Length: 234
Image 1 (cartoon, helix red, strand yellow):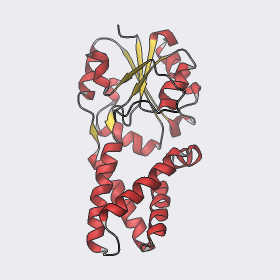
Image 2 (image 1 turned 90 degrees about the vertical axis):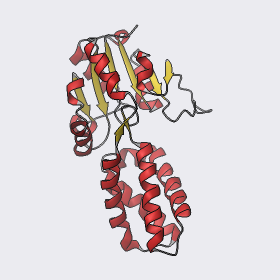
Image 3 (image 1 turned 30 degrees about the horizontal axis):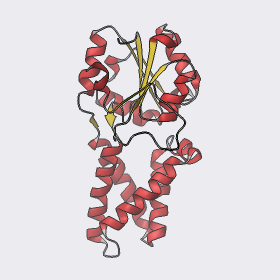
Image 4 (image 1 turned 180 degrees about the vertical axis):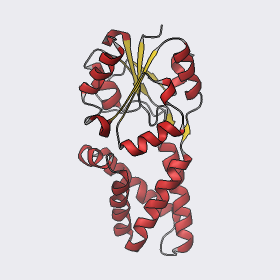
């Protein structure tokens, strides 16, 4: 049984973000190692991956960085180049090129668009809540024609607050005139998309798109685990 309303996350729930980022960085590292003999692509990619994860897994830097991703990437790559003793003047060109390539590489997860269409045709109220910069998130929404699927779209920097602030879930439910027990939340972030809405009594589904399973040290228990959003209708 589907609910009256579903709240969706955007990145790594509807659109493949992490996968395209990894692919793009690998390509960038291969290209850079061809013009700089002081580093090989595998070492550069591993160092970028390690420092990226460290940056985005830190709550303070995550909160700052997602509101200005270009500056966050410059800081990350600056740390990478400092560690590997690579030329500082290459940092900005690499980051800016990555930003362009990564946006172009974005794509729907398999059957994501079809799932939204089926839910909409069946009268399910749909909401989209996404953290990050409005300019970038709006670009994604417009590029993939997502507005037509959703009754309401809330972006962190437009609203003034974002996930895991429970106010954003309350705003959505008030707008759609639904109660928590009539609502599902679906997303890839255990804190933002599962723990926070569960505080309000929303049935919360974790999208384990990497199929890695729950972290051993987590205390968060999703109401359901899926690996693609089309799992909810199949």
